[in-house]
Image (tube, rainbow, N blue to C red; front, side, top):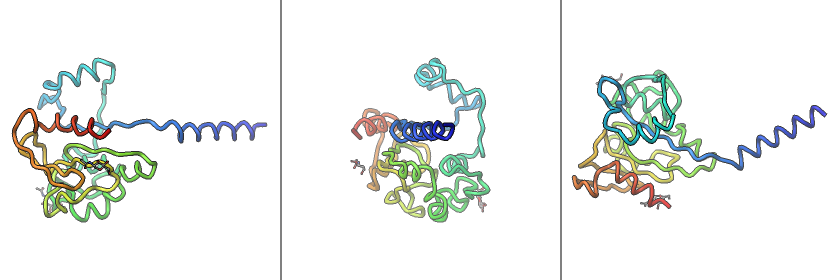
Length: 190
Ligand SMILES: *[C@@H]1O[C@H](CO)[C@@H](O)[C@H](O)[C@H]1NC(C)=O
Ligand SMILES: *[C@@H]1O[C@H](CO)[C@@H](O)[C@H](O)[C@H]1NC(C)=O
């Protein structure tokens, strides 16, 4: 009887995980620290997330540096293991070696293996999209929809890799502001 109960429970929980697959939205923002006052301009974000109760009182990072930290988020590894030591290519940021050894094993690859449809938009790794790191043709494995910013944090006058095609953007607030563009591309995906 015990065995039977256990089996039933197991079957039930497996069915649950297979049939009810959660959507996952991962938002990555930089520089939300007290010194830079990064929270101050994002009034709507604070209102829609913070005021609704989603407050994070503790924070843990493997490294406070941009590219090493992003590389940890992607791989789940400490800097000593994924070896992106700083924001430069020689330091392992989106370097050909990193792409060959780490990126192939990053979380989007596993999302894909679980049959998720994956969408990326915005800044990726600081050195992404330059000729020395494979250019815009390089689409990190695991992403179905890829809208990767070339280089580091720009909101105007930037290039995007849209599924591997280079897209140039200028400084028109109505058409080019990156945050709004991401929203439009996300809506268009359907
Ligand atoms: C980045 O890391 C590499 C490898 O450890 C090192 O050679 C290089 O000097 C570092 N660059 C900076 C700007 O710290
Ligand atoms: C990007 O690739 C996805 C998946 O193949 C496709 O559905 C989508 O239409 C592509 N987007 C553009 C803008 O080409």
